[in-house]
Length: 196
Image (cartoon, rainbow, N blue to C red; front, side, top):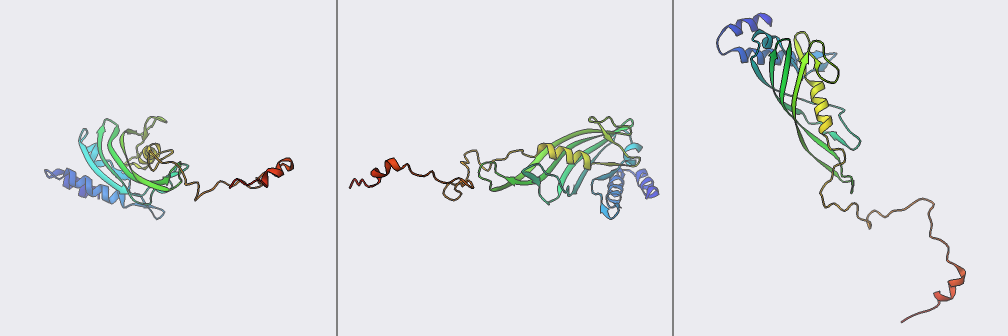
């Protein structure tokens, strides 16, 4: 694959094609039978430092949830630009994913799309909380995408700003062991009164 990329890089206008082929080949790699759709090769980036490569990566991000909201099983789409700057790679763009959850008032199922701007730096020796790890021949975008979408999911979503909550007739509040208090026998004479 490396020889094919070098040969393609020599012909004019084929740098982007070579990068895309390498990205597809790397993305198709699997570790233990698990596909890695967010793994993007960096070889072509470091051959032409300062060159910008636009990529679109698509894949699922399973088990991403907050208390009441979570990503749907649909694929996440990230439109990104990767650029090599010295020994680092900068990644900028947007990531979009569908979410579902419960309205905090009426508890009905609701959902929507969330789009987040991404601007991160990858380096060989990452600083915790500031940069991400850069592999020797590829960059794994999954941690960035996962973290960005987790921070953008609504914490307490509403189906509508005017939502009044559950219908009390359909959902009466009943507390176990809470019975109506016994009537005071001193007022029993009033039960016999009729005002017709």
